Each structure stands twice: as structure tokens, then as C-alpha cells.
Image 1: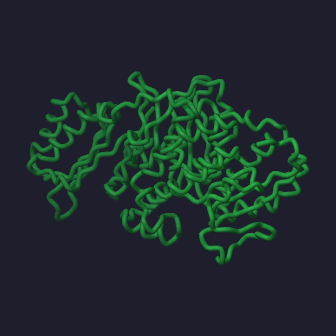
Image 2: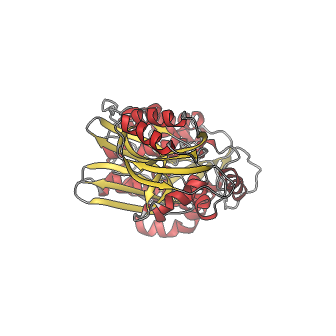
Length: 440
């Protein structure tokens, strides 16, 4: 795209839903400020929506409103395309063709980049136009820019955090109120924190998409999304929250990527987090990302992980970076470190070979020898008990809850021991828990 004769930057927006509406409102509010800062006008020239006649809470005066998505990729009056429609197939076609036609792209679409990042980042480099995605991870938290630029002098060895607000909200409610999973999920859907079909959130898929992007930035390697292990929340039992609290922990929806001697370990799961850490105090829909690096030890980025204004703020930040580059005739210089390099395929460690400490809880008959049998199985697999909590039977009941935390054990070995204990006569296998412990 030639920039020398451009006196204004013309923006085309695909999708004017919650986030798109906020983007339009922010730009309308900041037009004069941006013109003073950059010496160039930003104009919304086109938007594409599914329902042209729908009422929207934003001013689209003098904007071409259409329903043909691909027109943005070819329109002569669009310099920058903002993709906010979500999904994968349609957004892939739009972003691909926009880049091919020399248009810079801003997207909030983590699934798109997690699945097709190799192709799109390579195309971005080939055409010399940026593909920016600050809004794809952490909503309004500027974690992408921090990792792209601010940590350039560091070697990152781990990225971890709470990057799905829905899951954090659910676990916070369960911990604070003793409510059951299905109850708080229904409330979250009524409040708009969870979708009608919450699968992407509660099964860890959404967090895995985001983690793929953070891992790519952290280790500057291509990530095979299909190899990311993710676990959901449905198996978390309400009783566990009060038990782990006594042990000095809370349960949080953790996303973790770290470099080990075997390669890159990357997984999403609910985990015990020490009450002494910042992570344990990040509640409700708030997100946090921790980056562990050689020069800085660790840094923490905390903020709203979702919502129209928070996500739109990140979208506009990317747009401003592109506008500044265009104004200085240096569009191809926007810094995206090695994101296009397909040859650097990460060596991802099989989850069964990763090692963790584990919280295990069993509901057992209150009779002599049960704990001894349990300990004998653990000993046979060379698993030691670091913390033990055993409650007395409740009035009228003949079972007791036994909870323990193990030493670091290989996943494959722990699962074998866990299943053997559940098969013991007198162990209520349907009321047993296995939760990993977060540690670096």
C-alpha cells in the first residue's frame, strides 16, 4: 500500500456487535485527539454487519454500511481492516485476502490465529503489512505488546495465568458461596458472562487458543494447537474448595506454557494455587498473565479480560500503532518477532510425560486399613504424601473424606495410582477428585 499521498487513514470494520460498537464510539470520541497527535485523520469508511437494519448504539453517519464481508478486503477506500466477526472460516478468508491486497489488519480473533497463524503471519511478512492482535488475549491487558517489545532483552521460560474470565467467575463463586457448578454456570449465562453454549469457555478451549498465541510469542516458535492439552471445570466438586482452603490453596483456571528439558509444556487446567500468590487474589472475570524471564524474574499484567470497552481499547491501540507507522511511511517495520517463521515448529511435550504435584481426594468407608491400603498403592508407585487432611465422618455417615497433596509425579504414573486407589473396596470412586497444583 502506498502511503505517501494519504492524508487520512480509512478504516473498515467487520462486525459491529459489542466490541465493534465500542471501537466505533472510541474512535468517534478520539478523532480530533488522534489527528493532533499524528497529523493525519482517521476515518471509518466502511462497516460490514450481518443485519443492516439492526439498531446500534454508535454513530455510523457517513459510513458505508454493507453485508458483503469480502468487500473490505478489496475496497479502495479501506486502508486498515479490523476483524471482529469471530469464528474461523469467514474471518480467515477476510484476513487472508486483506493481507494479500496490502491492507494492514487488526483482529481480536484468538481461534483464527491459533489455528491459522502460520499462514497468516507468513503472509503478513511477505506483503509487508502488519497483522496485530492485542485484543485476542486478555481483553484490555496490553500483554501482547509487552511480550512483543518490552521483554525483547529477556529469555522467557514460562508464561502462566488466568485468561478466561468466565471460568474464573465460576470458580470464584463456587469458592465464596459453596455453590455447585451447574448453579453458578446458569447464573453466569443470565449475566452474560457465559454463552448459551459455554463449551469453548468451560472446557478450556478458549484459554487454549489464547495460550497458543502467548506461547508463540514467548518462545518464537510455531505451536500445533491440536497438541495443547486442556481440561474443563465440570468435574470440580464443591467440597474441594473448603478442603484446599485449609491447606493454603484456592482453585483457579490456569493456563501454563513453559520450557523444560524435554521441550515446551503447554496445558490448560483447573489448579491449586497458593494463597500467598497474586494469582489467588484475581477473582471474578478479571484476567492475569505472569511472564517469568531471566532478567526480570517475573512480571504480572492484571486487568479486565473481556467486555466491549476493554477489548475495544486493545483494538484501538493496535490501530493507533498502524496509523503511526503509515504516517511515518514505515508500515512494514511494525515489530512482530519471528511470528512468520514456519520452520521453527515447537517440540511439544506429551502431557502424560509432564510432572506435577497433585491434590487427590477420596471418599472412603470409615473402617480400619483403608488409609493404609491407599498409602501402600502410592508407595508402590514411588509417590509420597506432602500434605494430608482427613475429616471425621459426619453424623449418621460411615464415610470419611481423605485429601492429600503429592510430591512431583509424572502424569502417566499418577493416573495409574489414582485409578488403582479408586478401585479399592470401600472407596467411593464417583466422589473422588484429582486437581493439579500450579508451580513453576
